[in-house]
Amino acid sequence: MSDCKPVSTPIATGTKLEPSKSRKSDSLPYRELIGALMYLSVGTRPDITHAVSWLSQFNSCFDESHWAAAKRVLRYLKGTSNVKLVYSTDEDGLKGFADADWGSDISDRRSYTGYVFSLSNGAVSWCSKKQKSVALSSTESEYISLSDASKEAIYLSRLLKELGFPHLAKTVLYNDNQSAGKLATNPIFHARSKHIDIRAHFVRDALKSGKFELKYLPTEEMTADILTKALPKAKTEFCVKNLASNSSST
Image (cartoon, rainbow, N blue to C red; front, top):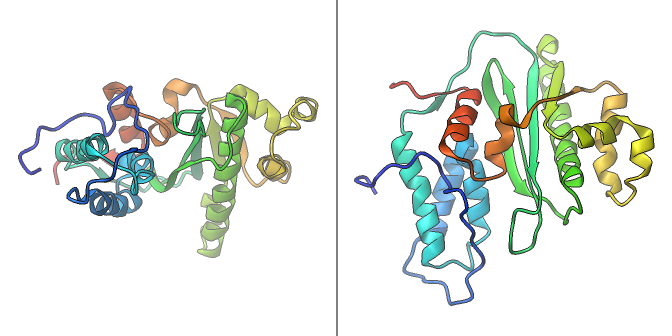
């Protein structure tokens, strides 16, 4: 792949993959490639985290179409080989961004949760994972995402305090779904959504106890978008920039 043609996004918009019904081809090192990409996504490349998470579900049921999608991630890395995470001396507190893509997986219609936390203008924790149950609305999927991000926010805040940086532990969590925000803060709205799993209401208790602050952010400015779905070039570049990845040469 050293001579491959670079692409500007890790996943082509509109790409749909389902588990292969044919016998997987053992001649394709699909699982080995996904494993290598996963190592990279966990360490320094949050921009490929969703692509790797999405492709990894086909480790036991892949074919040529899945292999082509996995190779596209390599082509994306080829074109962004000088991207890196950069941290500044800025001492702003912890910032989190939580998002969800409702019912995006065509095989089981489960939604994807995506969140990222930044400190000193650089990403320090990120996640892209399929939700454990099928959400009945976009509000529900976004609220589940908020719940997952809330747990990480509390963990990171406690860690910063233990390390002696209590001034950095103050956390603001952003989301782009106003209905989910109301569900987290409005008990009347809350009562009309009893079908949502009790575990997801963890976020409301965390807000009431002051563990973090929740703020609305327009979808156009949501950095965590890249952790939930395939994006066009312009939005991908926006998200990469806001993850504090630097595209300058090393």
